[in-house]
Length: 108
Image 1 (cartoon, rainbow, N blue to C red):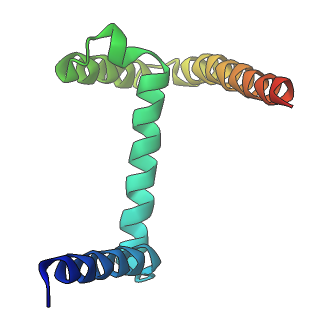
Image 2 (tube, rainbow, N blue to C red):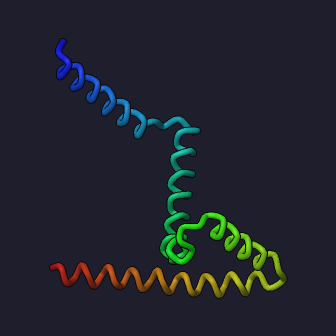
């Protein structure tokens, strides 16, 4: 077998393994995949809020800020704080959705 044929075979094997990994339905694999997806989404929220740029990607500063938020939620006015944050976040999500919709309309 030539080196080229061996490389092609190895690439096919790796591709088949990747497909098998994506189709793996064992409970622990599915849970891990869902958890990974959830964590990626949360990281996207940190980026969407501009925190990565505002802190120059300083992980200690980001963690400190998140801990401050957690402290705020432990106070008596937790429901009010959550309602205020939720309102502001929904406003941004709605604005993004409108922006994406208008971009699609312009592309047509």
